[in-house]
Length: 370
Image (tube, rainbow, N blue to C red; front, side, top):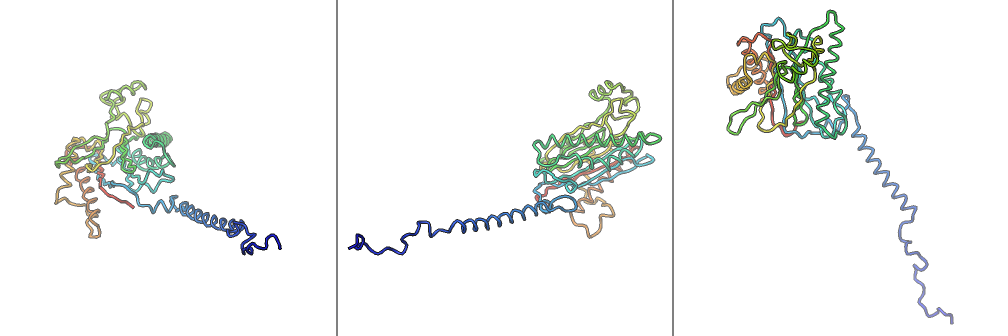
């Protein structure tokens, strides 16, 4: 009798490894390989979609994105030549300025631009500033992610003003005879729901705020750059210039401007003041105007008159905005345009001999903008 004769017969699985029922290493490797290729293909497709570039340099995904902003600014302009031989003021408005930028920070969803330029000694400086300043802002705007947005935007604005001034002075000097033109400037740069206010000279920007009781408050967004002000006079005198009869060298009324090359060595500078504010639900509109308007209206009176006109049910709209094709929002824009023209005309009738330009920037609450 064999030693193992009394043991049960061996089971069918005798001699198999405990891991024999698991997939073999080659099978595991193949399945893992197939999964990785699928994931990589999905990632590649996502990447290609994000990097798809359209003609303006922005990705398709970014252009289709619905921007989350609370407010929209819509500008309107009216002007009158007054008793001057020609119109020396210029302006520029770009509500959808965002389309001009490439590689914006993900924190920036919308940019708008509104500028008014009051020319003197000719119209070339104001036209040049209206044509070129916003282009230099685009070129110098910070790209990619930004650690300090406020500081970078302010630096961009100052640099853009300097470059615009340098380029114009180069053209003015090369001309024969040399151009003597100069201009003041008020620019609003809307970044998301923050408005950066930039100004040179004596044009003004005024914010109308509506109080809870229905009354309005006027907030001055700019300060005049006149040579009689202490800071301005000290800079002029340190540069070797002088202030006589309230003017630089007895000639020019403003102490900061674009152009005016013959006064740059006397302390007239192109470096603007830059401030900012965040739009609130109480903000109604921003009134921007050259000094021609304020020779006929005080700041408070000008804003009050705008409010009166906007509430007037019999306000006459510009003829090109009366078509039945226009929707209610366009009619609102037309009313603002009519107010600008009326205000400029009233300033001329009140014996303002200067050019008069008025820009009204309507502040509208809007939850989503495509």
